[in-house]
Image (tube, rainbow, N blue to C red):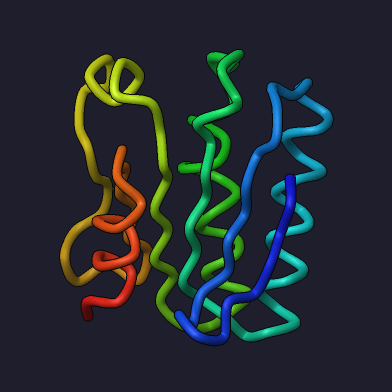
Length: 122
């Protein structure tokens, strides 16, 4: 995963450059966590369009364990959007997770412009 802080947009961008193993998945998300704590940044765009070998446990681990832990460590709301391929998005039961008043908001997009707009809206 390539991780970069975008001060012009006020968010972290993490881009998966290829499909990964389960260990690489955890390493990539750890890099995001460290960058978020360093920049004190709770807005993330994760581009997973090139990561086509999704494990069955990866997405659940990210949503149910990893992101809530990061949100608590940051001590502020965490908004995370995932860029995904259209066929993957259509296979998911829902496009977003979290109540509107929850400190953790997650959404999935196929368009990077729409994802950036969602990250900027609060």
